[in-house]
Amino acid sequence: MSLLVTGTIGVDTVETTHSRADDILGGSAAYFACAASLVHPVRLVAAVGDDFPADFRQVLEGRNIDLAGLETRAGSKTFRWHGKYMEDMNDRESLRTDLNIVGEEPPVIPEAFRDSKYVFLANTHPAVQKQFVGQLAGPELIVCDTMDLWINAFRDDLLSTLKIVHGVVMNDSEAKMLMDGTDLIKCGRQLLDLGPQFVVIKKGEHGAMLITRDALVSLPVYPTDKVKDPTGAGDCFAAGMMAHIARTRKTDLPTMKMALAYGACVASIAIEDFSMRALQAADADTVQQRVNAYRQMLTLE
Image 1 (cartoon, helix red, strand yellow):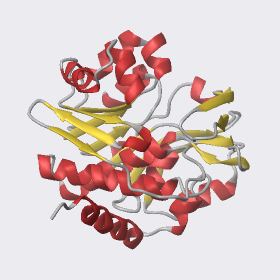
Image 2: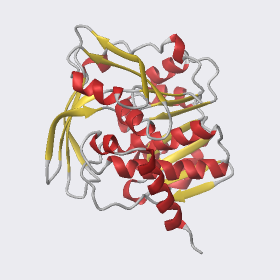
Image 3: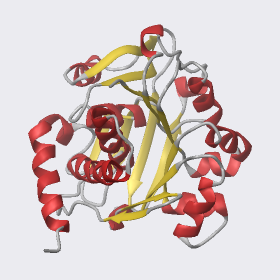
C-alpha cells in the first residue's frame, strides 16, 4: 500500500568528537525515504534548490523511491545544516542553519500521489504539515513528527495539526515540553487527548514507547557499538515503523509492536556511518536479519 513522506532534503555538515563529514546528503525526508525503501516502496515530496548536487539525487534514485514529488526550484538554494555532537552522541549543537528553500512556499503533492494511504509528515512547520494533509484524498493513517522549535514558537499551529493526524512521533524531551510534565507515560496519555490515536515517544539510547488508549509498549534500541553519526536516527526509526505498517496494512497492537521493532533495527543501521552511507550499503535482508536477532534478544524463554 502506498507510503508517502513529506519533509526536508538538505546538505549537512556533521561533526563528532572523532570525525567530521562536510556537505553530505541530509534532511528528514531524505533519511526517511532511504530508510523506508529498505522495507517498502515510498513516495517522496520535497523541494531542493538548483544547487542540489546531482550525485545526491542519484543516491535517492538508486532506491525504491518515487521521486515524482521532488521539486528542483530554479533560483533557490537547498536547505543546509551544520551540527556538532558531544562525546556521548546524545547531545548536539546546531552551529548553523540556512533555511533557504524551506523558508519559501512548500512543494505541492503531485496529483498521482494524493491517493496515498499511509503518510508521514516529517519534521517541518506544523502549518505546512496541515496544508499537506489538506491535499490528500482519503488517507488511512497520517503520522507527524515535530520538534522543540514548533512547540515553543508555534504551539497553536502544532495543536491544530495534532487534531487531524492519527499518530505523532516525538522524543522524550519534546513530549515533556509540550505537556509541561515529567512523567512520560502521563505526557503520552495527555497527548492522546489532543487528537492522535497513538503516540510514539523516542528515548534515544533507551528505546521507544508506544502509548494508546488501551496499551503501553516499551522496547529497547537494537544494540550496536558502531555509532558514528546519529543524525536522522529518529527519521529512520519512523521510516521502519511506517514502512512495516504500510506493508502489512494493519495497525493492531501486534503489528504496531513489530513496527517499532523495524524502526529500531532500521535506525541502528543508519547511525553506523555518516549520512545515507550505511543505508546505501544495506538491503532488505540486512534489515530482516537484525529484526530476527532483535526478536530473539527480547524472547525470555
